Image 1 (spheres, helix red, strand yellow):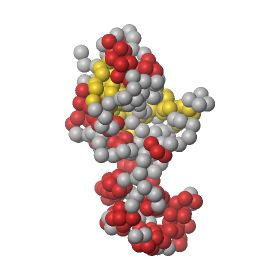
Image 2 (cartoon, helix red, strand yellow; image 1 turned 90 degrees about the vertical axis):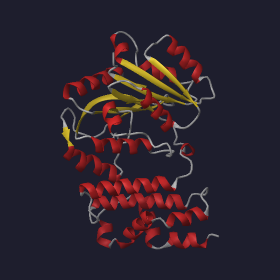
Image 3 (cartoon, rainbow, N blue to C red; image 1 turned 135 degrees about the vertical axis):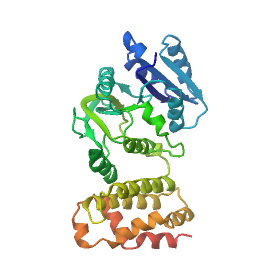
Image 4 (spheres, helix red, strand yellow; image 1 turned 45 degrees about the horizontal axis):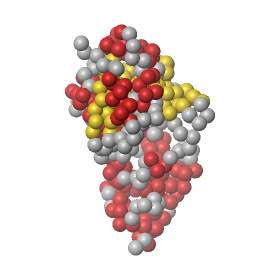
Length: 339
């Protein structure tokens, strides 16, 4: 019997949280035969594998895969390769799922014959034990077509308004669509791989539905840990630029004089300045970054904005500073002075 849904969980040094994640799925009764859980241990050095093996021994719906440490994208791809369910749902090993909502999403996907169902979620802070509802701001309980995807979803991706869109774990995906379109996670990316995957998935579908229910508790620490992301990578900026420009040209949204395009340039300006001011990146790498056509294009576009265009949008102070630095030529001058 083909499971209704495969839940894919990458796990790395997650012995403290992975059992709570598994227990939240509530593997009991008829639900057990409808669900397949694929946990990929990504070379954990703690007791994660031992706990997973013990759990799987008494739960036939749980499959444990062991691989050498290769990163979360590799682990998710291994999960996709092993999964057999009609739908795929992705979890992190330190989060929990709302089983009833997931069950409802599966039923709704079947009823409407849709390749994607999107739900709201909670952000949970274990230090304060408080949860905050995060809403996707998508019309609920009505089938949304390709026009909505182009003019709303892609526009939000473009301007950086990605709450609920770039997350994996509030979505029920069609495994058939993922396999048919050859979608996988980019194993070269250290972060941002989830929103690349989601954006590409939206390109493959012509309709989807959103629900108001909350399906997930996303666990966040009390403070932002920038070390989790490490040094920014040139190729991630370039890939992001190429994909977003391809979408803009393909679907003809966000023309160069639009407010949304200026918002996008503000985001790019901030990323450029962040990269070029990062202390772990050498002057040689920074000069190489400035030679990319994509970076030159963004900087030229910023420099060509007139005062009326700049006045259209109230950017954050960080974006405004990045704009001013690029427009004043301070970036290129500063890098040129570094030996």
